[in-house]
Image 1 (cartoon, rainbow, N blue to C red):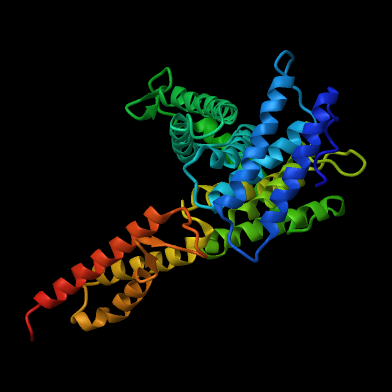
Image 2 (image 1 turned 45 degrees about the vertical axis):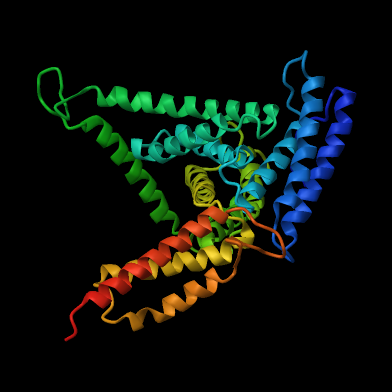
Amino acid sequence: MADTPSLPPPLDPREQPILESLIEIRDQLTLLKQDRTTYIKSSDVMPLYEKIIEQVRQLNEIRADKPQEDNQVDRVLDGCFQLLSLFFMTIGRNNEAPASYALTSTIKRLLDHLIEVDLYSEKDLAHVSHTLDKLREILKTADGSHSENFVTLLTHRIEFSTSEVQKLQDQLREIDGQRVDGKFVAANGEVPAGNDEVCDLLGRCLLWSNIVLERKGVFPEAFASKYQILVEIRNKLEKLSLTQAWSLRETDLYDYQRQLDRIDESRVDGNFVDSEGKFAELYVQRTLLYLIRRSYGYIYYLMVSSEPVSEALLPVYNQLQTLRRCLIEVKNSGGVSSPRELYPYSMKLNSIDNMRVDGKFLVGGDIPEGQGSVNELLSECFELSYELRVAAESEPEG
């Protein structure tokens, strides 16, 4: 990986063996991520999780009596946790504490960008707030099931993000509190309808649209390569957001995260600079920042949309989701005129049901995570099919 040299090496020589161990673990996680010959299983992930936790324990002991440092150890550790978090999603353990790590990183980036652009609404914060509440509940129930050090680390990350959300929400409420009967009222009792704010926003939008029209999509050579990289990342993530149920392995998001992180962190005082250290013009700044923000938004969406089902069970789960949507569509459109019309659905449901052994779906002798979700979906499909059949049988012959 090429993302560690920007940080200094550890000052304490006792941290060097930890750095080497973490690099080795990260390499193992990377190789596992790249292996497409088999499904990822809990038995593949948990031994590496235990190795990382052991290194965290040793690191905490070394740093017990001194301020928290920020060196290559921390960056490699972050990479390990990012990958590990995505692996927990891949094996369907979304509702466990380790799966929260990568999502908190993405949320932090989104909130930083909202603050930087200083243009947001309560709607922008609502979903993030909901997700943070969910993550907090996961951590509350994590005691005993995962390392105390790891849970504490995650808790600190979330309470930092919550404070940022709260600060933004407080500002919105303060503005909202100035309204009287839903309107902004001036001292003389007149309603200016937020004239100054709207005019300012309108001016900014007009300025930006004029620059875009003037440029006609032409990008300066000094920033062209960075622009092309970000466009490619945005397009790939957009495609994944449309087909994620069938094509996404959550660990794939790690590479996109790291590319975006490096580009985002290359800014100087919030500005993109060329090879000579000159700041990019407004058009370049806004365009690149938009692409980064849009890409982080897609990553956030893909993470929160991840189903708590192991990769090994996703083919069955996705088939059942499709069947469920079809059956609901049939029901909403008036049902069927004859039970015979339900045969294709019944045959498919029975074939999936027959895959179970003692009520469980096995893959290569393993019992993948997500059995409850798949069985619940299967039951729902059977129930829908039964309701449609009963309704068809009760129809008078005509």
